[in-house]
Length: 467
Picture 1 (tube, one colour):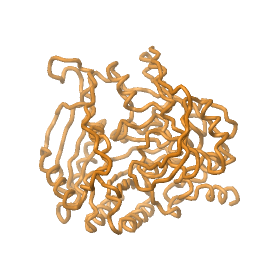
Picture 2: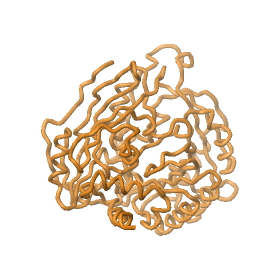
Picture 3: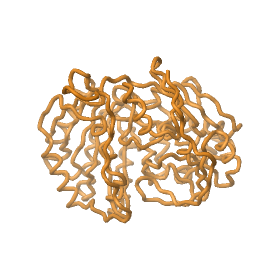
Picture 4: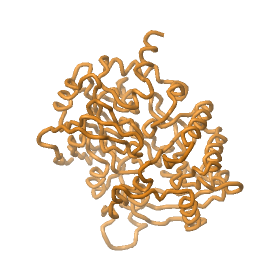
């Protein structure tokens, strides 16, 4: 058992700032308050004013989930640090503003890995819980909520910090609750033991969507991690062609001799400058996709590569979202149940036909979901990074959303900036139950966000109460 010193800001500060999500599409101005501890959080919530307050981490959610126009935004990155690594129990306790990057630097050299990690390590622990993040291993290990021992939650109802365990109804409400049930202060999660900081990777190239899905259906259960990149602009017989990558943590015997098997030193390239011109054009995407598909081996087994290149390849380029220019990007991610493969195909065809393809199109399989406002359900999930400036993009995505809802699927709210509010109850059938929990934890409506207002969640809560 080891206690690790946390880093905190000495005094809270405030600043008026224009905030966006990672997509840079919907900027709004807020009063940002540093909150280095629970006392500062409670004080900021008490003094929030009519527009309310919201906790924010590193701002890697794509849409407006971590914005609060005209209100207060609590900068939780001031409340960070690893408090305890219990190697005997295999658990980690950290403050909510601690990034996955900080945690990985601390635990990987000791032979541990996070049980779930999204596509970037620059997210905070509190933000990951609030959005119930998933990774390449959901089909085997579930989401971050499946590995939490407990978290400390400060709810506006009484201003007290309570320790929440999986048996508590507020546990399920907070997972995927988008920061609207309370402010997470710290959390304890179970870790995954590893022998090395390398991955053993298998790669297969698929000529179309049918082959890609068949490969995944036949072999994903035998692989801890699985993800497929697909060509969002390919048409005809090549529609949905892609590259499937599966892997697991390498053991010592699989590494070449020499060096520290648990060395962890992520490499970074220079950051893209502000004002970088848009290079994500249909011609550029088509050329990139062709090159990416051709460079992948048709079949390869057992390649050894670092953790960072397997889990977080885009983190090597700081500010990579500037590739999309001033207009920014929209990441659209949805999930539909198994048996609704036609919805995935239709979405790819719709965007490809309109020339709105993505060079970051990712297909995965989810295992059983948690319900409530947590995004994953058992089925196929497709994530697409799309240039926000594409003409007609909103109507294209609205049509896809309707088909997703009709199939019993849903859109990931952590990445959303434009969903039709009328579709939300159909996509999230547990919405009324979540609204009741939110009301009990925050009856005065202190916790607010741009997403909250856009999706009319407070209005839906009132309708649920009087129904």
